[in-house]
Image (cartoon, rainbow, N blue to C red; front, side, top):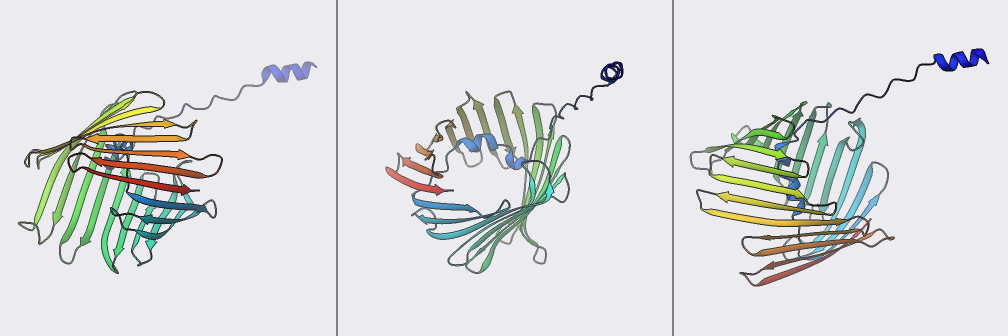
Length: 312
């Protein structure tokens, strides 16, 4: 008994686990206004049927059928592959391959990979009418408190045409992030053969709100505001202004999420008096999701409605 008591009193408790490190990376410039953009509805017109099927833990296929006057109609086949050769976290695994094709052979493909923990590489390609329509290459480097990105669109080094965009965003404080964007395009259709646009940007993030803005030397202003009102309700506002052309568009929207009821509703109205709304309802216990949406343009006296069913 004495030996047992001595062993119990002399045993040292295991050291406490280290506290989780705070992620101070500001994200990418592409996601600067992401919180506000998620609130606005992506409305569609017509009918849409989407069937998704997971063939394994890494591979999923989809079949979609669309009938609409606003978007291309017909059948599309899609496939998604998420590899496990590079696992950053439970939410990040690479490589990722996404593609879909229609009956005419028009293809859209995306490849995302992480050569290291700090580098992300993306490629987006589109083939339309048996011709290369677009090609975009993006590389992101994520540091401890900054992100640097370089994007090339339709590069043609032999003819000297294409577009290049350089991004940089830095966390100045825990709530304030500042950055810059430089866009350059070369094309025979542009007066002078090339053009460059420099923009400055910033984002201030509070406990339940976010304010972001982008200002360029071309006279454009893009500002967004996001507010988390409650567990179910979020609101947002967006302002896009071109000072040189004297044009402005303001949009106000809100999003209601009720996971307990399987309900998701988004609505928005802009200064052109265009109203959009999307309702998504999960038809539990069957794996179906019903989507209803509407678009009203009061000055044009037009109304469009869409209905969709997602299986899987």
